[in-house]
Length: 178
Image (cartoon, rainbow, N blue to C red; front, side, top):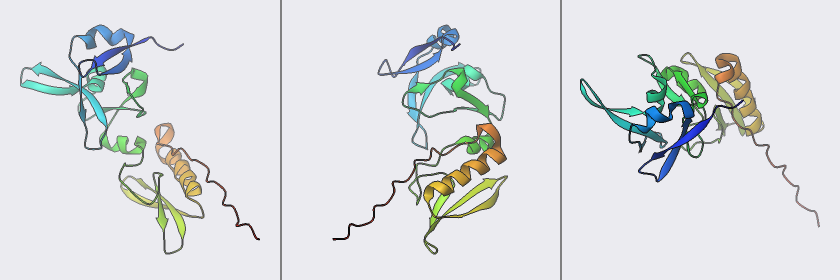
C-alpha cells in the first residue's frame, strides 16, 4: 500500500513539493525556495540557523539526515518536486554517477554511454567502472549500443544503475521506384 503524502508550498506558493505526510509538520516549520544547480536542475532548499551561522539545506538532506560524506538525490528527476522518501537515495558522489542520467550537454547520442563513431559510421558503447573505461563494442544502431550500456550498467552497478529508456528507431522507408 502506498504511503500517504502531502504537498508543501515552494517559492511562496508558486510551486509545490511532494513529501510524506509523516514529515509535513516538521517541513512546514520552514520556508522553502528553489535554486538552480550547476546541472540546470532546480532543487528545493531552505536556510537554517546553526551554532556556526546560517546554512543552506536541501529538502532531501533535511528529510534524510545523511551521514558525513553522503548526499541525498532524487532517484527520478521528473516534472515537479518529488521528495517522498521512496524517491530519495543517500549515496556518495561516486555512487551518484552510476545512477545519473546522461548529462544535458549536447553530444552525438541521446543515450548515456553511447557515441557516434564517424570513422566506421557506427555507434560505440562504453562505460566507466572504478575510473576505468570499458569498451562495450560497436553497433549498427544507437539503440543497440544503448541496450549494451544498460546491460553493462546492471552488471557493474546493480539494480540502482541508470538505465537508458530506449526508443526503437523508425524503420527507414525505401524510396519508391517510379
